[in-house]
Amino acid sequence: MTPDQERDGYGGSAGRDMYRVAKDVSPLDLADYQRAVRVLLSNPLITDVYPDRRSLPLVRRWAAQLRTDLHEMLGYRLVTTANTARLLRVQDELDTTRPARTRTDRPFDRRRYAYLVLTLAALGRSGTQISLSELADSVGADATRVDGLGLDTESKPHRDAFVDAVAWLEARGALSLADGSAADWVNNPDRAEALYDIDREIVFAIYTPSRVLQHLRSVTALLETDHGFAQGQTTQRKAAARKARRLVLERPVVYYADADETIRGQLRHASLGEDLERLTGQTVERRAEGVSIVDTSGRLSDVRFPSGGTPSQAALLLSARIARYVADEDPPRLPAATAGERDEAAAARIDEGLPLTGILDELSESAPTPRGTPEDPENPGGPAEAAESATYPFVADAWLRSAMRELNDVYGAAFAVAWRGDPDRLLREAVRLLASLRLVAKIDGGVLALPLLARYRGTTAVVKPRNKPTPLFDTEDVS
Image (cartoon, rainbow, N blue to C red):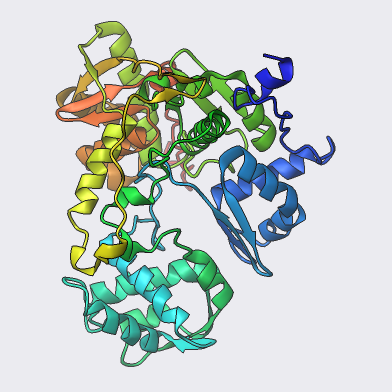
């Protein structure tokens, strides 16, 4: 293999020219280009106002190079219009860690998601302006045809959920308030009203499905697969390299033992880190257990850790306690579910709720059954690398509850009052955060401590004493 072929992230056996990320970007402009990449990856929809007014001009400046690099490196497609930039991603796995959020930063529930989709449908049929009550009537008419949904404007919880969906669209520029107040309408819909201007270009940019949902029998049909079709060696390598890069970008960490056997070789390939570092401007850290991007910019990851706020602070302190416990006590080790097994379980839960009566049988898609043994992209024609067996230290729920109560006793003065009085709730939120970052894996009866957790084993904290106010009058006898 020649040096150029070895540098090629696809194995290079086809002898193709080496692809260089950002090849037309000068060294002086590289940091600006990488900033555009980070903004686009963290915000797949960019408008004049979202996420801020500087992002769209930045992406427009580099649109041609972004379009080329993101497709070549990741298989993503960038679509730009006069007022939007939309990154159409490839979905490799089911991800529940990045929900839509309400005005008060709470994750959307099923009702809010349903209202959001029905609102988009109603706006697609509307003109340039619409009142909030008119929009609610239109969404309500569609919602009544969905079993168990409905939209009763006499119900305050229904109005709250509906306005959360409207506010989500407003934040992205699909709607802009022309008159009135949505908050007043929520509190008194008979006396208050709100009027919105509709940006149809943004409405259509938000929802661009890659498949017609009525044709699908399983949510897994939305995921990227090779469908078992015969492919050439170069195509297989290229697809595996793209998937490996996507996983490193999309996940907090990619453990080799957790990855599909067809891409493990690509994850270990030196070119993966070089390509992603030049693309994003961030450091790719490689350890014995896996690969991770260290986001020093704070603009690539949707969740910063550690960060402010009681749940994040408690999660950091808890991670240090778990790491020390694992090192000192050597608890029993258990296997964790792989990414494929997690996807399978999540798909089963989702598919249980699919309305199969709406599926067009003659056009429905179903994933074919894989045949034969998967090939190794680094050695097409040969068997894939055997799955690595990995076990991780088990930490029981009882120990976690005890540890959180101790943390609450020691550091509670620095916690918000709402969390300080409910350590069990704080524990649930801290574990949820650690699991979303792949620092732990939740299983029945406790959690498994994953390798990245060791990064925080030396964490220490000091509660700063609050400054006591100086009394206005000194009560001591000074005579």
